[in-house]
Figure 1 (cartoon, rainbow over the protein chains, first blue to last red):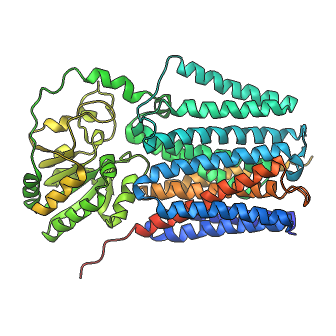
Figure 2 (cartoon, rainbow over the protein chains, first blue to last red):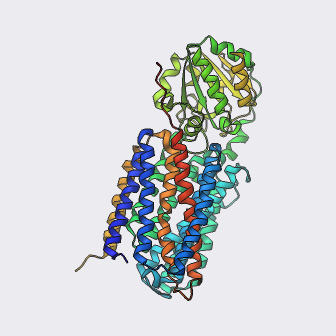
Figure 3 (cartoon, helix red, strand yellow):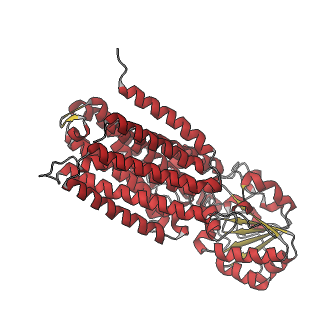
Length: 465
Length: 102
């Protein structure tokens, strides 16, 4: 049996390894080593827990069995999941962290002796507060992530669900959570504990339903952050350094990602969370459109334009993920490169459904990461490029964000696609994007619309090159 | 008067938030998806609490309400640990540099 001091030191070591795991992600070269540090930290934490309890009886075997069951399911999912489904996967994983936090809190509430927190009905006040916070945040993470998962998976409609009195109701529930926590701590009643959990599950659900599909990058990052705070809350209850460090790391990581995503849309965090963006704007825009002429072309025209270009910039968006066009796109680029055409990729911060979504898909299609650029890095190059190839992106290229203060997306950083000599826009129809506004780019003199499925169009262009 | 150990844990917590802040800002945007999957995996270190709960029963009574919740939490966290690290590994293996021409 390990002494408490020695195990505390080992937990500290695994916490440090987790910091190194995140540090490794500062560049793709060091990232794999970082992941290894993370695995090592986890192995140390689990081993130390076993050794410090030192109970290798039948219970130990049962623990191993449950560990293996979970491990096998996890490994199976990790190998089978297609890269395009990554946002759903991450949302699903968040829900599991949340639920695990809830279960640990329940276990600690029912059997506080095992954790050295007092006896049932007489739990130490500090521990009870920490436990309630961990359980409530865990429950919110769980139900919120389930909704995010259903929306990303397409089981639930991606459009925002709003109803009258939504915000007052949410505010009321949040206040009731605080009141319940206070009452729970003063009475130690287990009924209140269950009510607190139920109410937290409910608010997680209510918080996410009004948020639309394209705001998912913010939602996923936010839930990522919550799962961290839930872990930290439990870490305080268990007085475990590894858990406290990890919770803080994950919590701040998710918060930073939410901030970056909000900035990418020029919206405040609260604006996104209060939701209903897509629903409110769609009606106002439908009056004055379908009037202006557009130029549309076919694969042959597109191939001709690109063949005569000396540099091409590709702008991928969520539509590329939906059409699974990343491999076809890379083949097209390979052909272009054979003709000595310079090709680079421009990624908007909120392209896709989660942070870094496009980068992973391009990496999957074997696109070298040093050909892929962020908005600030590449935005000046559009003026010197011959062709911009927009595939599955829309709002993030809309020049209206720079010119029309009335537009809902005014002030959002956009890719300066219109500065290119010519723009090829692969899209299934002229329908507006998520923000519900028309894209001026469609009607520009130098824009050629290619109405087709992204994957099929890309393949046809390659044939014509 | 002695300092409550809670204050030490709070100090670790606050300092870790700052470490997280600086470390995550230095993560390259192209790796934001692996960042999310790896933070997922490491936050499942909550499994240590689940193991404590699962092993709390005595040998006559392995299954009581508390330990059952512990066992379930072990499986959930294990899905995340294995799934999270392996899928991160899979993603990171795809990030390659341009092959040098000639």
